[in-house]
Image (cartoon, rainbow, N blue to C red; front, side, top):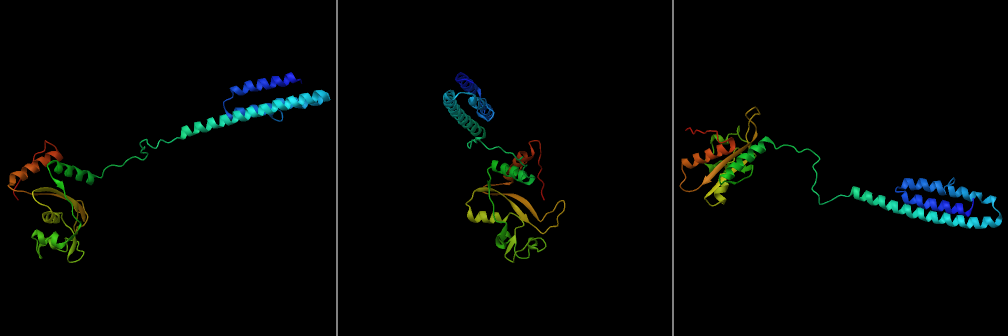
Length: 250
């Protein structure tokens, strides 16, 4: 083994390092040159066959090449590590301004909610405004101010949930008519939706809790013709233009 052989190992190693682009390949090649059985390490073991004078020169040159190659390999390793880390950052980067993705399938609107919205929107289209009131209502608004005095059938215990003798769970949405007359200035058109409560056994057509919706209009010069026109437009909007309506006296 001569100094020229050492220079050839150095040259070949530097050329090969230029083509390596991953850490695993770099570690494997580094071991093949500088490892315990590496090419440069084996060359150093040949020093025992040299004369003392040659051994000193050969050893200094070999150690210089080894140090230079170690520095080049370490620099290459650092550059590859930084490149890999940057690639990982770019791959896992999260754009916080991007719109979210819905991973869970969305449900459907409840039929009662869908029906409520169709009726409400139809009435709003006719110039009505939504008006709501409390579900737990005073007896005064629930019956008395609606001309249903004590002894009226609507007050029967078997039909109404009483909290006490002055407070009930409303059996209809009409208390909102009283509240609107006390708080709003006519003219107005209101559509009044809400839950109501009655003492009913559950079956195909009854429930102790159900939805009710009513229209309430206060204005001058109204007639049955206005009511009929409103109902016809409502029916056509909700059920379709081909649906006919007939009014019958009760």
